[in-house]
Each structure stands twice: as structure tokens, then as C-alpha cells.
Image 1 (spheres, rainbow, N blue to C red):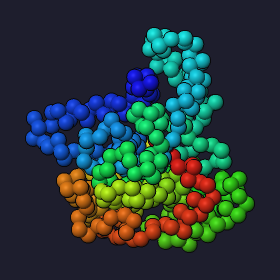
Image 2 (image 1 turned 90 degrees about the vertical axis):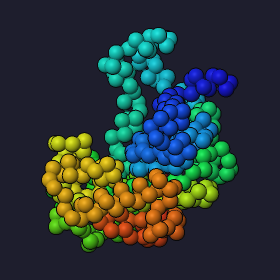
Image 3 (image 1 turned 180 degrees about the vertical axis):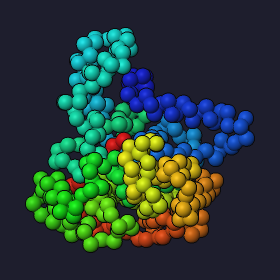
Image 4 (image 1 turned 135 degrees about the horizontal axis):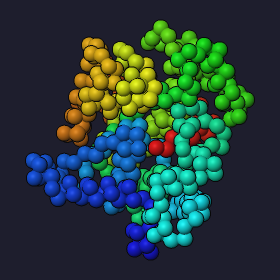
Length: 376
């Protein structure tokens, strides 16, 4: 069975990453590095990869720290479930063996993907409020080989995972990367209330009212316009990313002996992103998905298409300084305490708060919306 799992586990991307980390261990000294000081760092699906590797016995000893930016909250699909879902794809290809599958063209593969049967595979709703019953398909599979059990189960057991210093980072308006409506920047507050009510009423008749009370039109907004956009994308982001990742960090802190850090980027750049010039498909004005990784690698000026303001530089320098400190030492600088003692809010300065967005997160948890956290 072990041999079967190793060949047919389905988690081939993670096996590639593990192979790459083994290569690093064998060769890092030739580049002046230390195999005992390897930190893995990933954003979005890369963040999902980071904490998958934390839970994999095959990656034990291959790294000493982990940075997960905007990754998935949880994955618990079994190999049997994944195989059953994939049969739909297999039937649409018309193939009966592996040789046939390998010979398919890109076009044939895309045509066989069961978008109608499994619309969640396209993750088209990831940046919108959820639709009841519309859950995302799994990215990682609990196959008994790469992943021996669901991650939270391993943490509850206190065994079978890699206990290393861990950073969980997200941005306040993750969904502003690619919001659900092209005209969202033109919304009125009336539009905002209508969309929230329309999307959330299927989860309970009182939920839209409670949500609008916690994300009100009177909330402070760092710009003079686009405030309904900011409120809506913050709400979406809390449901899909921020609140579930608060819980992820809390569970990690309870299980790991190593330090766990949690941050939320709240910075509003001095100008909108130029979607036509960059990887960002929408001219976001707020703390959009990937703002942190772009700033870490010094790409904020390129995305804005203009020189950085002093506050832009302060934000970029603050983020880089702390993450570099973590990568070098396994700890943040002394002005940043561990989770759940505090969550760091990163703007052009560092602010530490306790129980970040607790009332909002309590509402989404009690309403069952953590099940709708995105998988990327």
C-alpha cells in the first residue's frame, strides 16, 4: 500500500517541491548557504504549499521556518474522494489508460475539465461573497503518503508535523485583487447593501443585517471614493481568508512549540495599481491580494507605475525588515510579539492588536462560513 500511495497519491506538485528541497539540502553549501537555515516562503497557492509541507512527513528536516502568505485555510479531501471526482474528467477524455492521457493536447485537457459538474474547480467565486452550497474543490489530498491525515487532526494529536517557526500573513482586502463586479469602484452605498443582502440571505434571514452592522457605511475609509468597494472586499476577505487564517494561526500556536506570528496588511498604497501593466488584473486601491509579496520583493513602484511616496517606502521597508529578520533568526524583531498575544497590522508603521476582527469573525464562524474559505 505504501508503494501504491507513493506512485498514485495525486499530490505530485508537492512531491516536486520536496524533491527541490532535498536538492537544496545537498547543494546549498556550494552557494554559501547553510542547510540548517532554510526557510520556505510562499504566497497564495505558494502559501498553501508552505503549510502542506509543514504537515508532510516527507519534508521533515528540510527547512527550519515557514512563511505562509494568503494560503488556504484547510484541506481534508481523501484520496478516495479525489479519485471519484476525477473519474468525471477521465470519462470526458475518452481515455482508458495512462498512455492515452499523456498524449492529450492542452486543448483536449481543458475541454475535458468538468467545469459544469464542478464549477468550484474554477474558483470563480473566490473573490465574492459565497453562495450557499458552492464550495471549492480540493487542492491538496489526504493520501496517507504526502499527507497522512487532515492537518488539524495532526495538530490535535501533537504528532506527525514539522514544528518550525511559522508566519501566517494576509491582506485586509484580499478580494480587491479581482473583485466580483467590474463596476465595483462606482458602487453607491445602496448598491453595497443590495449586494450584501442578495448574497447572504440564503445563509439566514438575519445575516445580511448583522453583516451590514459590522461593516457599516459609516466606517472610516482612507480614500474619498471607492468606500463601498473597500467595505465589500473587506467583508469578502474576512470570510474567505482573514478570519479562517486567524483560526489557522490560533491552532498552530496551540500545537507548535515554535513561535507563531500573524499579520494583516492594512496599507492603502498612494495610488491604484495599474492592472494593464502588471499581474494585477484590477486597478486595486486598497490592501489587495499579493500586496505583501510585491512589497517584499520591491515591486510596488512597478505596479503603481509611478515613484513611491514616503509612506509607500515606509510600508515596504517595514515589511521587508521584519520578514528578513524572521528568515535569518526564526523570530520577528523585538517589537513584534507572538500570536495569539497579538496580531500585527502592517501599514507605514507597525501596530499590534489583540483579537483582530473578533466580532466579525465570530459572526462568520457561527454562521458556518468558515467552510467557504478559499482554496488556492
